[in-house]
Image (cartoon, rainbow over all chains, first blue to last red; front, side, top):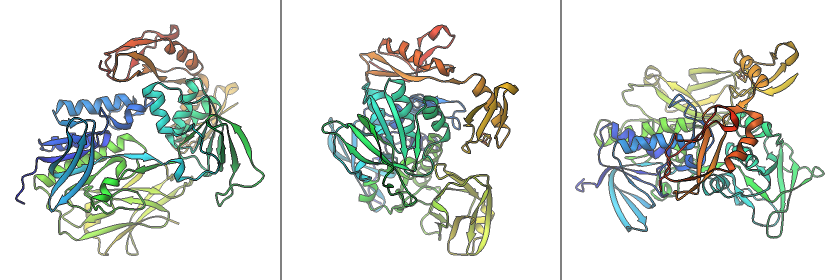
Length: 426
Length: 116
Ligand code: SF4
């Protein structure tokens, strides 16, 4: 490689994932690090999550989102890591080793920087109404829960007076409480599945505390209004998740908040030619969080949607350390044989999707989400061909809760088949 | 008899708490549900998080929290108090914004830095 890159590492995204990766890469020995953030400040989505409940694993106390952000921003400042704000990353290319990153900002215009390694930490975005197809008109007053959260908590606007929430994801639940405290009336939270999407803590403290009904196995089948939303029709759904005729109920509301899921934001990764996993919506990664392009790593919600920021911090620290190891030549990677890890029956996804069969020093932590909730005890099985090489008991399993098993070095070195499968015991 | 959902772990057991029998808890799948059920029915408290107006800051709103939990039934009244507050930037994370809200010993503190 003739070209000497401008940076050892460029981190794309200044939310919790990017901040964690940059600090960890510094601690592992890198000094020429650049963090690029499109907003005017670091912290990402945490800045608008003003409620508390963050940080129990990492800081051993309950913090609000801005407090958690403040602490990890301090870690970047203390290390003197260079940050570019108000700057969009427009392109990412692999030039056979060196990575070329196209940057755009008001002050600097369009330019390129080069880096030996890149950590992708762009986070995720909310699914919108377009992705869920509700019949009716298209008045104003329909917005995603996260957009409403930003308006209310950061800009200080009240976004509506009579509100209904579609979907029971955590942001929607948090906004039900937030809007109620700010004087709005939240009439119901409507969930198409027979079980809630968010944490039970949020169901209790955001809905039950304020007497807001949670309508499971229901959906909004119609939205009406000329300029502003005026009413929605809510219907019960059958097992096929289609509305059941005759169950219509009309709610007079001026606002519909959508909390129907999050999608990793990977336009840049795709354009760079990184291979994607349709199950996670993020890149396929090896055990060190390296993507299909050597030297490009991914962590946080761009890789798979997390339910706890603490997990994002832990994962991003691994990605930052792995990038440093690649730069400092501590891990060869490259040509080792690869063992794919596949999701078996009952499994929503597994991560990493690939393990390099090297000299295993440490355990490899495999994250997964099950597909269906189950409130009775069961087992997670890891199979090498037909042989069960790990069996872990769980008192219950919920898709809303990311879980993991650790594969010990002795288990991994004994693998004989050409792939491993992770499944829920039937 | 009160029925509540335990929030200590995601299993979310439906707890029944009997006020007439010294807050006896049933329906819990594990021992942690007992202390949660008792305190939640005896004295339900919550940390309040909200925002207050701020002038000359990088944003028009500053996020704040109560430094200790408040009785659940006082949350709306505390919100009305916060509605009257208007600050001037700069503010640092942890600064006390309001001392002893509603005559309690609970303070309202800033949860982020806000520069001019
Ligand atoms: S009682 Fe125990 S098992 Fe049930 S929700 Fe509470 S902590 Fe979990």
